[in-house]
Image (cartoon, rainbow, N blue to C red):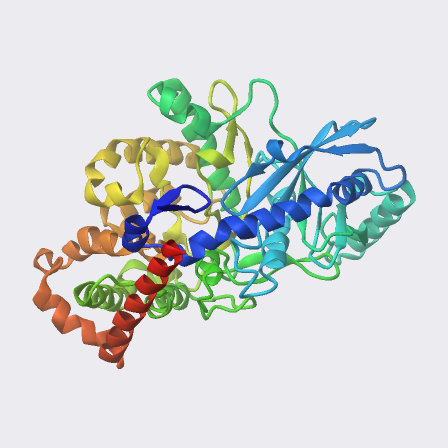
Length: 506
């Protein structure tokens, strides 16, 4: 007998062997169905809200696409909306999936995700207008409060806001971003309203990635554009580690925790990460320590975090080593900043390209944050078919493409004089010193043990890799209650497997 997750069918054997919490995964299809039904039943309200955003004085006729045209992703669903009698003919309204971002256990996560991403769009408009991206037309929060871009406000309100901005500029006072609160969406969940960037001759990179990667001209076009985007976004020094928000008065603030995919994955399973929404960091060491703590909390709270006593000891020893070695991978001279703004979720499915693989738009600006400079590394997916698992086992296959990308990055960097420091050099050093793998070990929930054991630990002593004696001596340094925690994890595992079996027997 098999049961369905959002992505595939799984057997009882698959479920028992999975590193993921299958009890959570099997509950997601029902929750997604409920959410999609709510959105489908609210199509008229969605159409009215869209019309209000793009023409407040005379809402045009908007038609929300039927459900079979929706585009669900890992954390959002995009719904096309066609607009009649308006220069904008189609828009995309993007709803975060509450059942994927921890809203059930940590209410407010949906709004946190929306505000930080809206703030990223506004910040890029102000500081990096050359970065290709959809225009954010407006957004709404879960309480119904709507925010619309200045360009699409009614004429009287637009003139009033423009006069206010000019007066603030003349007085030398801070100027708010271009999104202003007005009206209510009528919905109980939030969204982003975005320009539709898919046009004739433009496609998502992942659609052609495997087929044309071997064409050097296309590949170099992509690498050049990606390097320019990364350099532009990291050009402005950031004083703290964190994500941007828009406050009640419309001003951009760097006062949110640095949002990452891992945070929401943990919180979606009810795991308290210990990183509050208002937590920002002035030191890369402090932030790195909290990332190690995320691994600790996952080990303690995920019911199937370990498969055996030996596996539990190995994980504890690995996390103890990660904590001890952390200062080695963060430079003392820049640990207190300035930091670099980075898009941590760039991958082929988030890039639109033309037929020559020039990037025409970066979509999904979620999980953008000011992060330590050491965390800016070459994207691991630049080698087709490469994932962190096989990269950890066979890094030699990535050498050539890494050298090509960093050479192009250095070439683009030479055109720009206002960079904080030679970033291409730091990127190359991260690869040569294995800091590349340490940073991914910190940030990746699944696969971190493999990366650390096979790529980081051998730098210090190859004989320590998976060595039972080394694990036995280091494991007690993980926590003063390590042995008690290990016994509890074995009980958790047994109860978890029993619950999975009962679910499959229903």
